[in-house]
Length: 94
Image (cartoon, rainbow, N blue to C red; front, side, top):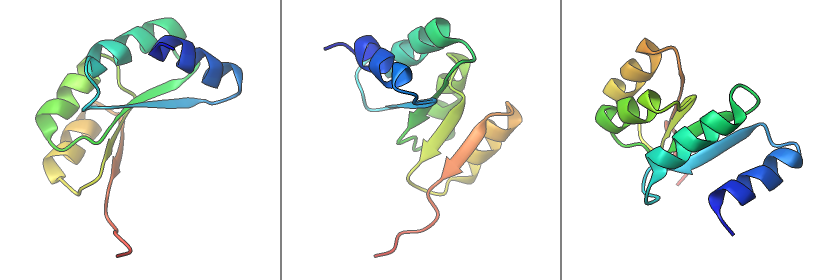
């Protein structure tokens, strides 16, 4: 099953946000493909973002949000600069 068929099943099932993790091979192209396919119907974001450089790359290909497992001020700043959603990891219960 390809990412596009999985995304299609999720969207058809009512999911309104999709996340591609940055460590997925070809993640930037996947994000770009999904944004081209779904336009504004679905939020497409990037997860496991560890730095502002990758955040900018993801935003450049259409990422609507940046999810990070850490609190990195530069990542938040670049995301906000391009008026995208920044979701930093700020609490670990353990």
